[in-house]
Image 1 (tube, rainbow, N blue to C red):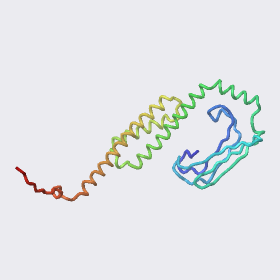
Image 2: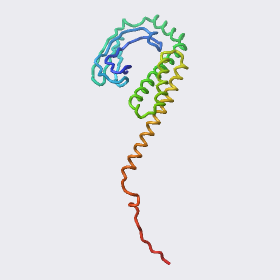
Image 3: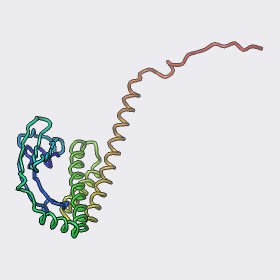
Image 4: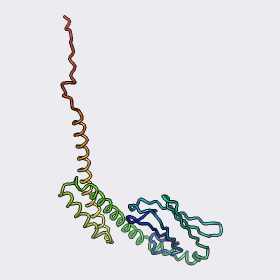
Amino acid sequence: FTTAEDNQTTVEIHVLQGERPLAKDNRTLARFRLEGIPPAPRGIPQIEVTFDIDANGILNVSAKDLATGKQQKITVTASSGLTEEEIKRMIDEAHAHAEEDRKMKEVIDTRNQLDGLIYQTEKLLREHREKIPEAEIRAIEEAINEGKKVKDSNDISQLRNAINRITTSSHRIAEILYRASSAGRATGSSGGNGKDKKDDVIDAEYEEKK
């Protein structure tokens, strides 16, 4: 588990029970917050979430920030659970909505992929802007802006088109940066050799036998 925003210092742990892939379609058992996470770029903090059910059906949930060791726990008693009838109903609903849930999960996963790609590409652009031709900067910024316009869409084809466009532009930028890096190394290597190549020639004497 990790953070979704830069410099996020708090995460909320949402404990659910149910058979559906989306949180909104399941029953909430508990919520708690882990605070005091050191500010960092999103995706860097590592939060370990542990679920432990004892013999009495009591659920213990803990969340621990691996960097600081800070931990928060919550206990969910057996009485907080579902009856047999409720469990059966939820299983039946999961079967009835399986295809609908699959499609919605695919949309959400693709949205998340696009959001992550936008974040990483903007970061790449900020860090290396001075090395990138203006035409390529305009192309990648246009692709990013189009991606931001559709990133909350339910149209998976729009989402994928945005991903492909940003990916193509970011690959071109990566090629430019690698070429610049290779050229810099080659220049440094050739510049470090101050000797005239003729200095390395060794004259040899030989005798022709007849």
